[in-house]
Image 1 (spheres, rainbow, N blue to C red):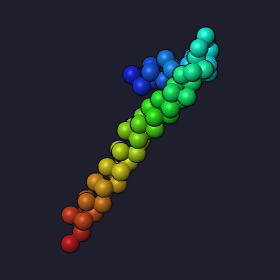
Image 2 (cartoon, rainbow, N blue to C red):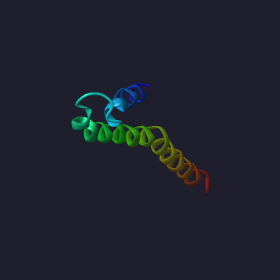
Image 3 (cartoon, rainbow, N blue to C red):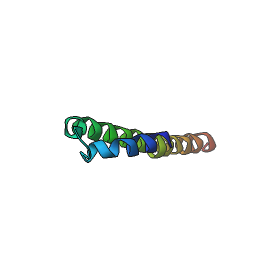
Image 4 (cartoon, one colour):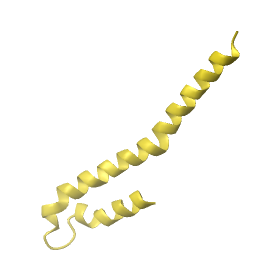
Length: 64
């Protein structure tokens, strides 16, 4: 929720809407990209890797 609010807050700067926004446009695009990558990493990649490792551990302990 916080990441989404920050991304939406940077959107006018990324689109260069408003006076002087073109100066900060590159910064806004970088911030939005970084937040997007961090969000995907924390909500998709990390739980997936954890589940795969957990499943692998369970197979090792059950097999004789």
